[in-house]
Length: 308
Image (cartoon, rainbow, N blue to C red; front, top):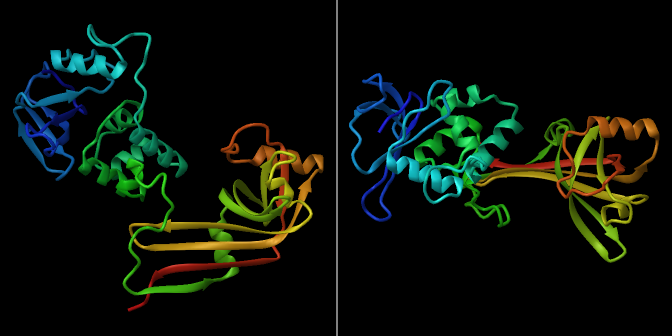
């Protein structure tokens, strides 16, 4: 077994379904990378000297210098990750990130944070964070807890739990308070862009549809396709809503906009909207029709703990 600084030491429990432990190698006692190692454990953040046993293996990171020579078990794991069965990883098939790594990277980029910033908050090496984001990995609960804290999210969110169920199934607060939001706070929560829901009347009846939106000059704008259900909003009064639910804290807020919707056709206005758009519509496809909603009524509510 050989390792570099920043590699991850993983110790599997010999018992089926037993606990698994991992940590970052922060100290080497031999120049050739052989044990023992000083390991900062992800579950306690403590550093101890470790002589790895047969239940331990190393997850190697990419290093600018020569890569460590993996043990047989490490080579077999690398082959399995890359899709082979023996003889090492296939050179024509680079490993892809796992679901957790993709969620960590997406949340970090959404907040405009660098890897160095998030790694510092989570007390881990930036190289290890890069490994988690770019390679298939199975970080421990301790590592996920620190990453969730660094990103201001939850372990459940990083694991993808609740992805296919509606929000709000968590426990309510013991002493909740529902309060009305002022117009300025509503505008701040709308921010500049995101995903919201438009409520409108279509030829098939009432509908509530999610759309990617932008806030431009105090108006709500979204892209759609001519003839689509959201396009039916044009020429009528509609409602537009955004919200956020914190399942862990039992808190949340919602903002409601009511006003007329129009088709934006002015060349300069369309170009300005397209150039300033933060994201492409998640639904994909050709969606070059811009619809704008001018708020005539702006209200909001927030649920939080009542003052003690």
